[in-house]
Image 1 (cartoon, one colour):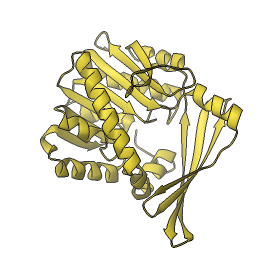
Image 2 (cartoon, helix red, strand yellow):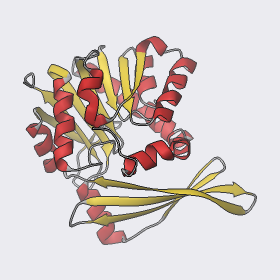
Image 3 (cartoon, one colour):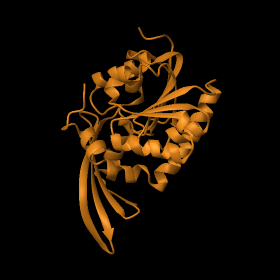
Image 4 (cartoon, rainbow, N blue to C red):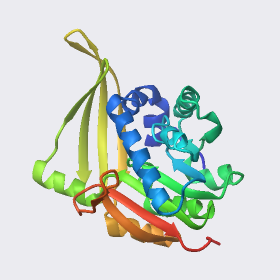
Length: 275
């Protein structure tokens, strides 16, 4: 199953990769990546995963994979975007962790075949609203089943720092349609999110401008769409794919307890080898 040009992930992460990468590599996102990598490493060590091979699905430009590699893990990162993978490899080289990393251009729906020679993985990571929810429920179950097939008994699945149905429904109810403004170097991004409670789908248009003095020069725009899950829905699809729920946090970095209107940070464990 290959990416069709009309798929929004292809447009957002492949065709508009250069603009999206500026956001992913912003100072704020890189700082968050370092914080998450440290929190993930600490959590894995507490669960007995002190080393081993990790898989990050939707690794982007390597802002989390590379810091994890610096902490001694072997990290495989996959992403649909060839540009992102090229940037991740360059980051690994700059930071001296080439031997601890492998980055592969891969559609998440085709991981089983593409990564079978690298399996099994000790832990699998989905971070920052990555992949889960991009297509439909059936596809999400398929992706998580492939993750199980690439893992071994006791492997962990971490779905972290992702938006939830409850959080978006709360924001929509109390704040309505809001427009967000962000600046990254000479780039200005206007984000216009919407949420449909009938389908639990969040959509957002990102409009990119370049700053030139006091003027904004229009560059491009791209649309993002994802089906958001509540905690119990995410547990349902993970269990259907062979993963057992372990625990949930509101924020793994600060070990905050889960709150229904917060972000999802959910950990699962593979209790048995998926047939």
